[in-house]
Image 1 (cartoon, one colour):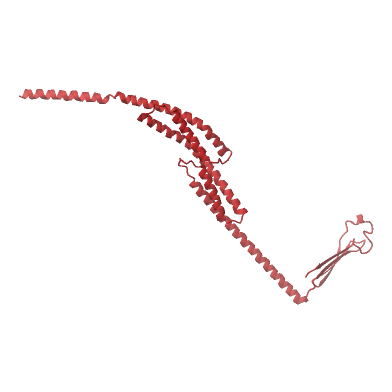
Image 2 (cartoon, helix red, strand yellow):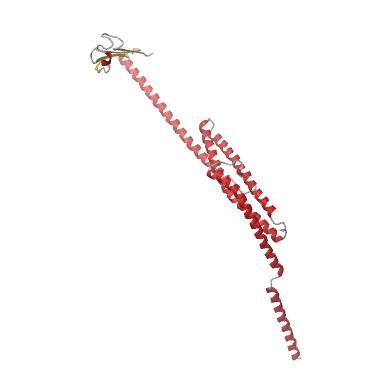
Length: 305
């Protein structure tokens, strides 16, 4: 009985050992269909990569042309968003037409979708850089329009700011790709902050000019008041002054003496001066005339009413 039990145990042990070795060999050997799937994926990956590189190379010419206009020339491209969408759509369409027609399995479909996303990302990145540069140009254009409107017209700074913001908004909308994550909110906020600072500075400058003008007007009024007081004092001291103001000048013939007389505000003034006549040699020995005449007599008359 004991010998029989030992025989049964030995047989079961041998069976377990053979089963273990069989399962280990089956687990360590990869199936043939996995190798075929992996090889097919690599094949499709290589085909899609080649098509993607060819499509990107063709689209790069259009992107480079846009870069020259925006970056090198500083020119704003109208409807840049639509043109960028057209570049990406044409590239995706060409990629779809050039892709292998037998790409219908789950592995090949996954590779196709992945390369399609990589293609769009490769085109979207340089286009977005140009988009940001164009937004900067649009911001400068709107700011220049705001400054011109605020100086050239009687419109308020608020109205000029609204007009400039609307101008930037329309241009930025047309420059943005519809099927992308591009946004212009940061540039719009920056433009609004710059215009607000400019408006504040302009308001302070205007207030300073108004205050300066008021101060000058006050000073002129003070001087006029002082002049009126002086005239009133003169009237009290010298009586009513005459409205006549008369001035006479006479050069004594053949001499350098010049006699000047004036009558102003009721007072007479007589002055004798020695002024050489530089043009005497040109006029002859006797000048214009020997007596009193237009050549040696000056007369001025001023009547204040």
